Image 1 (cartoon, rainbow, N blue to C red):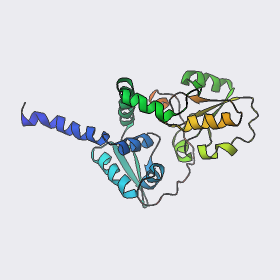
Image 2: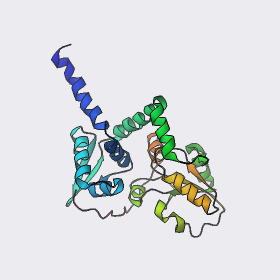
Image 3: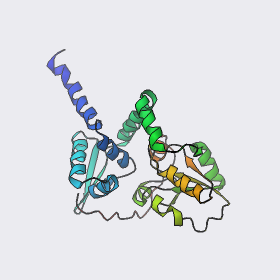
Image 4: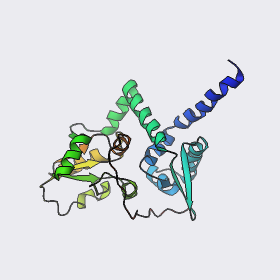
Length: 228
């Protein structure tokens, strides 16, 4: 094999290296939900701005993310839907073939016994109007894209966010994806208050990749971020 024929593999290895970091995978996971500023990403990860900026630069240099500027703010987004597909496939293959990943996912999910509902059944029940769908992600993610008919009730607001629910419809919670525990936490919180609830199997990432319908808010909430 000549040196020239090695070049495609070296270039591909750089892309693979971009994935080979837990924090960068977390950033990609967040960006599958919609574009974010550095401030917003750092706040969500509980990490420093400089650390997050450095990871984003690695992702940008390998063309996995793109940016747009709005005044003093820089917004990051995935470079295309194929990046989300690649990330989703990585998760799926790793969970299927790596016992360590499967074990870690189960550990992160916490307590078992949370009843789940599949996407097809959810769509049917939304059509019938006998279910109330709760998006427990942060509001900016809901504004970027959500399942039609979902109500935005971020997890920290859940305890007081269901005023007026008379119990005539079942509650279903969803969050970012299969690795996200917010929906599980939401169901457990509701159940602790005597309110029956289910969790949507997987979450927004898998819903998006499967091609199910989405909608965005017409007036996205400002996340209050400044420079990036």
